[in-house]
Image (cartoon, rainbow, N blue to C red; front, top):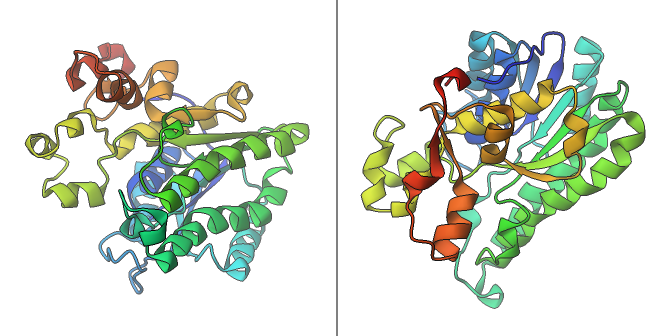
Length: 314
């Protein structure tokens, strides 16, 4: 597991209800951070995503159980007043913000793959922009003045696909645009934060075994390999823990500025920082898709799931 002590550090994981956002919040807490977690689904209200069992309160409790301090703040990041109050609360209670993970999304249900733009549901496509682009800009507008008070701040823009992977069209125009924007946000913020000693990166998981994806295949984290018969590429899938550990390692790295402005992946950082997924392996999802799926190499997913030495931890 990644080293590094984040005791005394304050993080905000925007969009921490489930999946990658939840895992990143938990791993920051495991390193000792105070972690504010936001989202629209609470124990009293359910967002348009429609998954009532995954709540920000549940995430906050996991953060605390892992060794940090989890603070759940219901927030719709499309509402500027709510985001402004969120940041004001962090300022009142902590007086600092060291890590901002922008993982707001919630648009998977709106994706229409293999559909021409003139046949897309226009309202759904524009809603995707609101969920995946507007939320990020609104959050940065209010949060960054607090983050730049101290040098060493970290901004992580979470997306789907590395910049290199996303050079291949993602088969849905609105989705393609939405998931390429975080790369440009990170690139732009790297320049804006430089004079304040801040670092900004974009980060993507590989083929993520999120709660929603497991449900889609009718499996659990314990039985996920049963889905490979239906979708062979699922054999390269990774648990949310991998991207969680990637963010933890980044946040604790005193030399993290070397990454600023770059597009990163969980698998790439697992190799760099010497940590593994929950099963003790290092899946290289993007290497597999580039070499095998797109490149036609005679290899399989197991060739891209490195069994790391036991010293790397699980």
